[in-house]
Length: 207
Length: 76
Image (cartoon, rainbow over all chains, first blue to last red; front, top):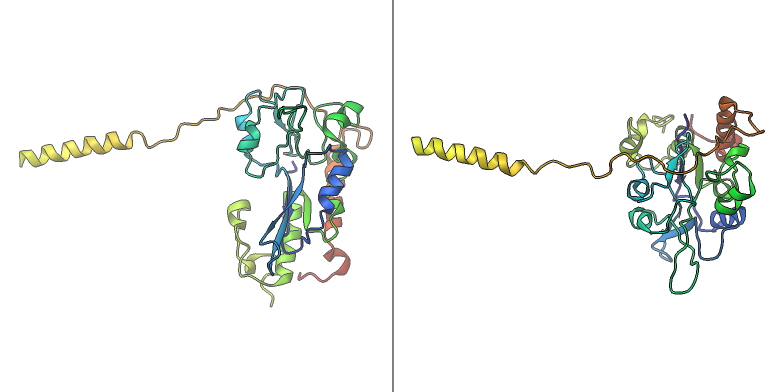
């Protein structure tokens, strides 16, 4: 069973916004809703770093825990999706999410909120695959076409990786080892188990 | 001597009471999804329900993100 995740490689991200643009275009996301966005730390300072942030499809998703109408579900590939027909736009998930992923379209005057919208990992939603309703509510279903999310496939520097966790973590490990800096992959053991020492990674023992 | 024993007992009771609140009550009971059932990603014409084929397609696609496969510069 796959465990679909995103990784953004801060060493590679050049803040081009290609991922955000690809997402907007692929799903025809309306104004005011940003399923994906760039966050830059120390903007303008030498050594600044940017990462692309969207729903991280958490293994233990806080949005699912707080939703009062239980509109969230998890696919076989561990992608966190929600049913817009159930969502009441209460905004609890927005406050629970550490990534600011849930978005709420302004549906009218006086700050009236619409139903929650978020990254679907390009996996559509609980409607018939490739149906007009699915596209209208959730966007395109690339996963059912055997494709990965548009943001990652569009990324020019391949900073944003999407795919099954073991596959993309292997790609990322290879990069870290090839760069040859840092004596450990920070947080690796806590997140994925095993060793976080560079020397224990594939090719890590070489100099 | 007797008063010391009593003090120890009082202390033990106080510690036991003090630690009684030191546990976390689960606040998010497992809740069922209440919405429509989603069709499987591999259920359509593209994969005809073949899950293995679907997973292989995604895994192969992910390797397009690994440019070291093209350049061969990665440390093995």
